[in-house]
Image 1: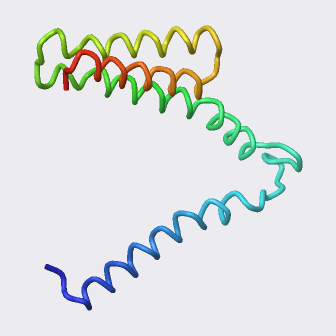
Image 2: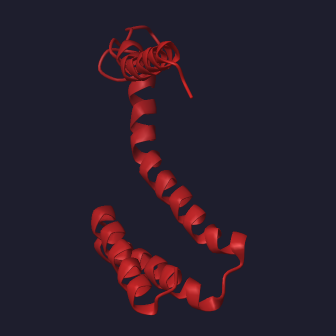
Length: 123
């Protein structure tokens, strides 16, 4: 059990870390320095941020999908427990390829998974 003093110290430290995590990107990326390698209106920083903006969402979705599909392999469940997971994963992929909308595909796949879990009773 934490004492009051320790709780305040931990809260302050965590608050400072969260604050710094939110402020540092503005400090680093707020002012682009105009140099020969980084001309005004473009340059290395802008192209890097464009690359991150384009690549980050698919990478995050891939990590989530691989983690989700790898979970049943850890515990080696029976086949009936994998049916809702597999059906929802295939549905999510199909809807995403069809509509090209991550929000619709993720919510649709999640809804299908929850319905199949409820109907089949596997958990």
